[in-house]
Image (cartoon, rainbow, N blue to C red; front, side, top):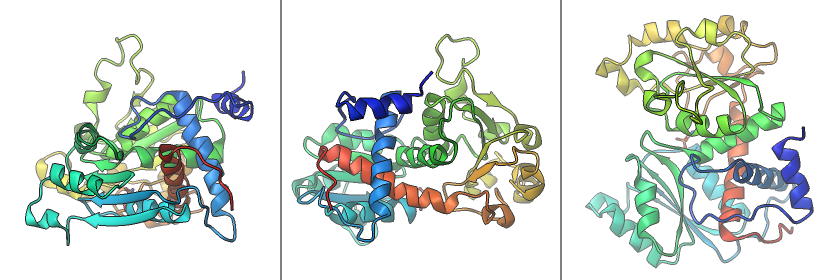
Length: 338
Ligand code: CP
């Protein structure tokens, strides 16, 4: 049977591919397989642009993108800015520090102010889950991309994760992927769950039971059609990692330590750190990913973080391609000329 990826490639060549319908990218929970594949296919074309000597295309000339970040970021903010600039958009960066947010301006007023300056796309990171939905509901003209909201979702990170895995493994159907760490509070893991299960990966979630996303998993064993019916939970990392083809280590949010959800950092590292001994139990070609920033020596050992199996830097590069693809799709397809 041909994969959905091959079928999409064929449909695109024949001009029969599904058209992009979205004005906003808020989460992946409602993305169809075809939509996921369309973004990934577009990102592959963008990666070709990144391989050129002159990394500049006119596709978004005349378009304006604002990154509106209420939380710190290196990867997501810089890659959206770079993606926009490579595609000739005008990009403006706004952070809480140094803007009128510091004077107490509300999120709604800030959004309306930015929209009033004719921004085509607002890339929003916010500590409150749901903030991008609020933005999308209240903005009549600008598109919204969720760049991470509270503990809810980080769709562009999940898209770059699956893009990176497809580059290495081809189809993800049936691949054993272990996500280890503070899954409950990880917006990356929550978006990864939707993307990876839709692409057919066999997911194993591992970590302390207090940090499992039980809200998403509830009823998965006895509800027909549950999206996470096939997801396994295994608290013992040595068992979870057995035969794994991919391990995604998550940043331990150290602020959880005082809340009684974790043992000490030392105990956490002993039980759930991805280190060379544990890696030896995985598939010989195992790939290790981490969304960054990493706490080396806590959830991942420095040896593994900088090993040949680690795809951390590739994830960053691919983040650029995926974010170019989303800006491109949201602005309406144009020629990717030189
Ligand atoms: N992975 C990620 O979102 O990193 P930043 O916080 O640096 O954007």
